[in-house]
Length: 319
Image (cartoon, rainbow, N blue to C red; front, side, top):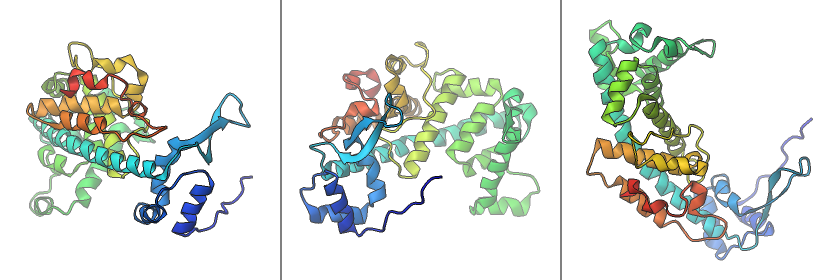
């Protein structure tokens, strides 16, 4: 049986004292306590984890575990610097994903709407195999439609309320898309009729499955960013698919190292490609490049932990 949680509540000063006992160097205790008050011990924890000692697991010697003790040279201020770097990184991603999300709404509304104003509600107008796939005791489409309709029901936008007072029909897709979040849009793109997926993907000079993969990857990044969680070195659950050379030659290099795809670098590269297709004059790629070039100098944490391997800044995708 597992023991109950028994750690006591600690004041901010006691929290700092505990970190110092574990070996974390603090150059300005007053400022450090201020950071704990402003940001929180729990939110800073992921940012000092790279500074903690790693030892063989007592239970499984072939594995390692992270201890609460810090490596010699670890400093509290470096954790704060990582936190601030990550905060700006999330804002950069949200800027790009907002553009991609808005464009995807237009793509789905225009392309599926030509088929039928309520194409999203009919499996016969979608990819039936994908839409009818079993999902959580139902089908993928039925589960998706419940979520999509809930988004509309929860909306308090004037135009949604006004529509409901005038018509008995559900919202047509060109209106419904405005109530859906990025995850809902990504699901519909994956279930869209193959011809519609192809038509949308052509806008970005991609194959349909490549675009679906990239949107799902960015949906994960969007959720991480929106919840203010650690992003700079986190593992990307939905890794972006490596494109063919004829699709996106400037992104093909993510195939060279799994760390590029499994960390945030791959998501940044595909976002760069997509925003350039949406707006050829965008400065987003250069801003993302400049941000990583300004990565704070410290022991135990480098750009490579985010998949930005040596030479990354010479890739054409960042021009």
